[in-house]
Length: 97
Image (cartoon, rainbow, N blue to C red; front, side):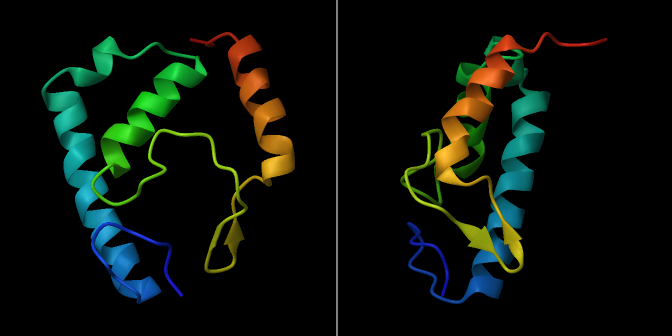
């Protein structure tokens, strides 16, 4: 079963293909139009804006902190119970160049 999405796709493989197609096109736009330059590096707010930009055409939760556990195939994303702590860690981590 596929994640609930704006496209009404129920097949996980088809949703994965559309997600890849849409998010790759949006990623190119993010850089080519210098949109990424407006996002704060190393902060959750910046990551949330990137996530929203890439996935807002597909998912209601784009750019939001998840409240449920999700997986794609055999890959499980960070469990919700650890997610807030992981995001706080990102906020404390300095960008290394």
